[in-house]
Each structure stands twice: as C-alpha cells, then as structure tokens.
Length: 331
Image 1: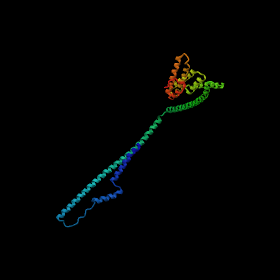
Image 2: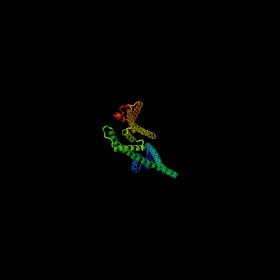
Image 3: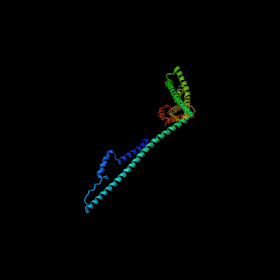
Image 4: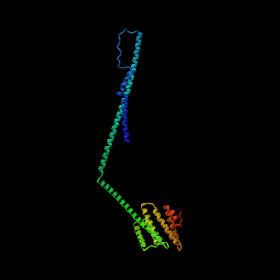
C-alpha cells in the first residue's frame, strides 16, 4: 500500500505539468480557433498602413480630425501591445510552472527507482554477509536441536500410545470386576446363590490382577475403587479398603504437586468412597466401648464427603440418596 502511494506523487506532478503546457500552448485541435478569435477581436500588429494618397493639404479642421483619429488608433495599438505583453508574460509563467512540475516528477520517479534498487542491493549484501558468517558449528548446533526436537516428538507420541493402551487394559479389567461384584453381593444375601470354587478362584485372580496393575499405575482411580470393593465385599476388610484408597489419594497428591495441577473429579470419587467406608466402619463400632474411635471415624467420613462435594457438586445429590452416608451432614 505504501509503495502505491509513493508512485502517485511523480505521476501527479507529470500530469499537472502536461495540463499546464496544454493551457499555455493550445495544441492543433484548438490552435486555429484561438487564432481566428484573436484576429477578429484585436487589430493586427502586422497590418500595413494604407499608402498615402496625394491630395491637396486638408483644411485646418480636417487636419485636426485626422490627428485625433491617428491618436485614438495609436492608443488602441498601445493597449493591444500591453495586452499581448501581459498574455506573453502569463504564458511564460505557465510554461515555467509546467517545466518545474515535469522536472520534479521525473526527479521523483528516478529517486524512487534508485532507492528501490539500492534497497535490493543492500538486502542482498546483508543476506550474503549473514550466510557467509554462519559457521559449521552453528549449522551443527541447529541440526542437533532439530534432531532433539524430533526425538522429543517421537517420545511424546510413544508415551501417548502407551497411555492409550494402558487405559484400554484398565477398561477391560474394570469390566471383569463389574461382572463379578454383583455375584459377590448376591452371595452375601441370606439364601442367595453362593459362589462356587471356580468363582472364588476367579475372584482371587481378579484381586491379584488389580494389585499388580495398581503397582504400575498407583494413581489409577478406577483400579483403586474396584480393588477396594473386593476388599470390602469379598474379604470384608473395611480398614484395608480405606488404607488402599488413602494410599492412592496420597500418590495422586504427590503427582499433582509435581506438575502444579488441581484436584479433579477422580480425587472427588476417591474421597466419596473413603467417606462411605469410614462411615460404615464407624457404624460397626457402636456396640463397642471405644466411642472415641467411632467418633473419629465419623468425623473423618464427614471431612471426606465435604471435600468430595467441594471438588464435584454432583456428589451432593448422589450422597443424599446413598444409605451409607445417611447420618452425615451433606449441606
């Protein structure tokens, strides 16, 4: 845009000079008409005065009249010459202005072309100087940095693929757990279908698989919750389930502190399950004499469910319908 504006200046100057030339000196299409108009309106300066006619000297009155006519004609001729001088002076001024504009336009045009070529030459020299100063060490460092970046991308891509495969494996394990847990719950009901020896071996394999996978992925919410359900429902070991969930929650807090992230809905789900198990365990202590221990578990359950609702407000509605948390203050 700036280059277009710069080119307007010399073009405008040249056009103005041409217009002034045309106004000062009419071209062929107006020259004949101008000459005819001047010839009709003004007396000709080149007209040959009439030759004197030999006659008798005029009388005195006639001589006076003739002198007056000569004086008037001389006055008109002087006025015509002055008008011509004024017109010639104006034409000279217009011609001078036109010449100045034309010279200025041409000068601007040559200046722009010269500056443009000069900038190109300077840019070419600078590029050549920069390319000439790049040493082999710099080229090697740049190549090494590029290779390092490519390696980082490859490692990141491999890590993403590994995480996706890991999530797929966890999903399959959770599906097996969800298929087995209802059978365990039905077996605990009086007159319910009891687990067969094959079912018990399958449960043992599932627990072993969950524990091994949780060792490699100690922050997995899904694995921790499923394993805690087996501890609570199958082994009937509430404290073991609570300790497992608290251990996983601690691992997650350590990982979050390293990357400076906030707690998520996974942490809210772990806290929700901790509250359930602690409140259920407190209910089993009502018939015992250790009232202080029961109150401590109830207070810890209240703290856990409050923190869970603070992280995920959807847990409030779910907790109000959960019989395991019926005696806690849900807000």
